Length: 305
Image (cartoon, rainbow, N blue to C red):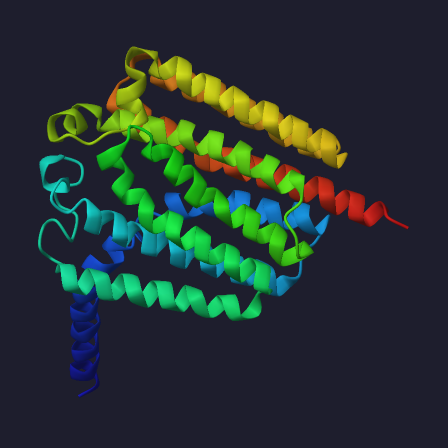
């Protein structure tokens, strides 16, 4: 009897997993890289804004918000690209374009994720709430930019970096100049790594008519990625100087610079697999920034009288 119950339970679990799997894939839960790319700089902004350890509830809210909005962004992106993804080898089997999830189901999932994220705004101040509305509009607009402009990566950079502005607003109740410096550094970095991502699909994108910075830059792609990466480093150095940050912060920036150099080595022949590996490596860039910020601000916090 017990064995039959266990077998029934296992079968139900297996059935539930198969039922949920397309939705989990649509949210990219099987690929957490995008969430980490969004999370590390957002947490770094919280620590910088607080000049030390931020309130625990803000860390929780922004962590959950990052997960929810990244998932919602993936859903709306796949909805926008549903007719194009089937023509690209890497995306042809995504749940929406392959028919495993309907358009109606995808939009219900997007609405559910967005509304859940909106509930988190109840715990933030009015300025952060208004900024969240602007950030939501940017996130929804981004997937459609690749139809109109060769700079959709800039839209992604703005959408991904908006959480940094919200972090400052949530901690300080204002958006100081250093918040915009961090926003700029993040935007430059994101345009660089999303260009690496676009280099993977460049040939397919050219065939189906999708626009990207990888296509815009053409044979100057490696140079332009390098310029963007170096510009991000310079902006982060200016930020550190403005805030009077110390050695740990600059060690973190030095680590970012070394990782950028490694990425340039990876893409030297522009092979798609190598470009994708270089893109994935940016998770460590974000972590290096976060670790440098946390160690430096926490040390300064401990040294305060």
